[in-house]
Amino acid sequence: MTDNVLILLAVLVAANVVLIVAALIRAWLRRRRASQYEPPRANQTADAARLAAAARSYAPTATVEPLPSGARVDPLTGMLTPGEWNRVLADEDARIHRYGRPATIVLVELDGLERLVAVLGQEAGDRILPAVADSLSRHAREADHVARLGPGRFGVLLPETGEVEAVNYVERVRQICELWLEAGAISLRLAIGWASPAVDANLGDAFVEAQERMFAELRRGARRDTDITPGGPPAATDLEGAPSPA
Image 1: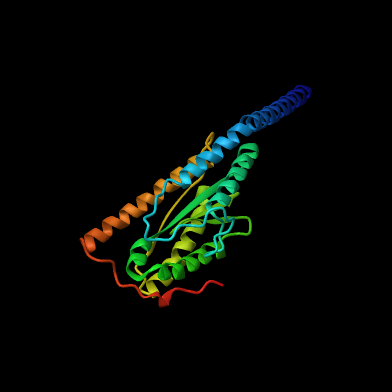
Image 2: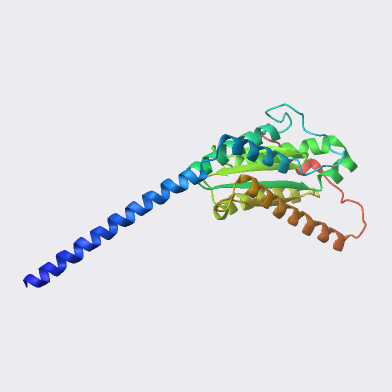
């Protein structure tokens, strides 16, 4: 009986030692990871420049009016401008590196906007864009950030959200926007790409990946249009179906 008790005590002591060692190792790994991901100020500046370069990589045609430079809020949609978007991404990138928290970038392109403006004029685009921006904002949380990055492009930053969880937001936005676009016979659709930074990556990498996915959707849409109406003119568009932003 005594031997059994001693064996039991030895097992309990050994288990406690293992638990303590495991806790110490986890704490050391957390400290090591935090020190690894703490970027120096020079790296933060470089990341911000990289994000800005990625945001400028899309060159729209001259048929759509450009965004105003130097403003913090886009006057047409009320969303953040590209400069403010880059600042928000740089701040969030530093937080991710410091604490290892998730975040996802969502890029939305209004496919067909340039054709619509070329056929119906700038006023047509000015009626559609605020409605799309309003849909993106309505389905976002208070902590999320929505920006207008180009004539027909929007960016959404979803802090504390992994890539899988971001699908819910993406599908809600896609469904509601395409529903009223189709109801109004408006020949536009959304191309959406989203991505989260992988381990040892940053939001600049996620931006590039989301952009590539969005471009892939644009290419698929272009192929569908070619298959349906090769070389044909843009479809007729009725703007009465566009909802008015609140």
